[in-house]
Length: 388
Ligand SMILES: NC(=O)c1ccc[n+]([C@@H]2O[C@H](COP(=O)([O-])OP(=O)(O)OC[C@H]3O[C@@H](n4cnc5c(N)ncnc54)[C@H](O)[C@@H]3O)[C@@H](O)[C@H]2O)c1
Image (cartoon, rainbow, N blue to C red):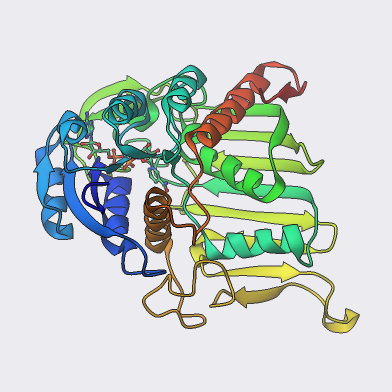
């Protein structure tokens, strides 16, 4: 921290970068009053128009075209790294060496070896992204100390359609070996979520990783996010990683998990959902309805027993003072979750403990080890592969 304020920067002004950029801007407007002054210092993106546009829109002091400028800047204390996965390690290591606090997007790195090196280098304030959801936290509270009790079966899906169009342009998302596709991009969230509710995965079985669209056209312009609307050339490049992955898992606590992940699920832009079947009942969540969940716990008598809808409100984690209007059932969306994440990271730096902290880089490393086991379990004829 410089002069008891915190200077922040975001590296990467693409799809997720903008959510981080907005998160820092809003972080000091929510929750308790103890946060030091937050200075919105810099946005760095290799594509200058993105950096300039985002800095102007969100009120950051300057735009940079190199992440090295952020690492070298004495007025920057905390940095989000929101670029393609293969760039995470060199950037995070340079930022740590320069004494910055780092919030790194998931998946932490392309390989376990990279993630190990990053975790080794990390200090106590360095974090990996995991957005805080009021509804999912409320379900976890019912698992750990409420009516649901221990999970017996977690069933989760993360289905997206950004790759459904076979002529959607080639981008970093389609490059890399097995496990670097749908599994890293969106499956990493689902594994993280399963472990948030059920505890660590012990072993994985029966993985199937499939590439259904083998090549994609080279884009003619700069691709951002899922590359909608970018013109493409006639040249096509091979896709190096999976469109779909399914697998089963056993959690150390005894629960079984069934997982399904796809980036070619027609009509579903961002469909994350799960069911947990527990000793005392069951609950379900659908990200399209982020501010609610359903729960069945046998608390009503038989004729009217069944799932009931719960709209999250001030009784649930993150809502009170976490939203400008923290009134029951006003609702919130995924951008709000990035505000909670930014606030939790800044609180961590400032020594405040109001929110659950973002996970450490060591937790990101564990996630990488689980992904590694999922890939390995594609070649074992159904035999279990332990997560290291
Ligand atoms: N937590 C979430 O919900 C979530 C959602 C989407 C993406 N992500 C993660 O965020 C990261 C970025 O994903 P995205 O969808 O925003 O990607 P993106 O392709 O939309 O954006 C990446 C940006 O990085 C810029 N860039 C490329 N090389 C650079 C460099 N050397 N220095 C600075 N900037 C550079 C690009 O110009 C682009 O603007 C990935 O790790 C991804 O897995 C997380």
